[in-house]
Amino acid sequence: MTTLLRAFVGPRAPRGALRAAPGRFLAPTALLLLAGACLLLSLLLPLWSMKLLAPQYPRGLTVTAYADRLTGDVDEIDGLNHYIGMRPLNDAAQLERAVAAPSIVLMAALCVAAALVHTRWAALLAFPALSFPFVFLADLAYWLRDSGQNLDPTAPLSRSIKPFVPPVLGEGLVGQFKTIAWVESGWLLQLLAAVFIVVGLYLHRRAYKPLVDARPAPEEAHAAA
Image 1 (tube, one colour):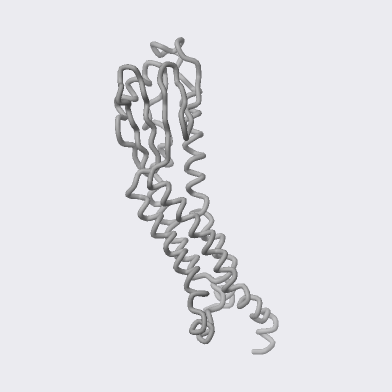
Image 2 (cartoon, rainbow, N blue to C red):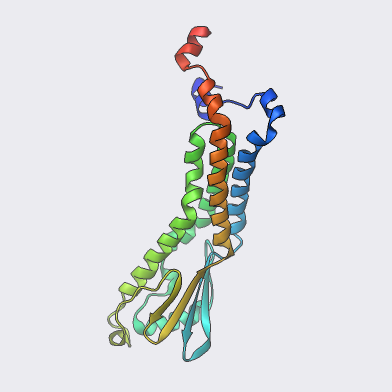
């Protein structure tokens, strides 16, 4: 292992210290691995939903977002949106849906890598997964705003409604329609992963920073050799 790689990976836990306090070194590893597992599991679960309530739909119309697709009453909602000049739902965030699944797998792999790296680089490796649930909501809010603010002026009912911004969470009004939006279990699992990462990095620093600080500087190690 080269000196540069050693500096990146960091020191291993001494056997004596590992036997004396195994939880001190195993806890951050376990939490970062759990974070990666939560991210992978979130691929199978919905992340966000919105219900549209209208007089002609007393039970409402619902669209649900997974990491890579939309499900639910997409066609019916697109039919209503057509009259007010709003673009089809699947026309928004096409790039994000295309890269979401491989990106989440990559972030899970980075969490595993962070568990194996015992230096400050672990925080950088885990940062994408830590920020992902918040980036998802921010990106979703952007596309909702973009779709509601850029209505087709040639649509049949374009003059009956002004540009609007559907809320990414909570209730909103769009003409005579009411929208209710909420996060789903997959997003909550990603948020749990972020919590695991924060706690794991705190314990990681407490466990391994003293070992990093105790290592001789590269010049000293070279001189000793």
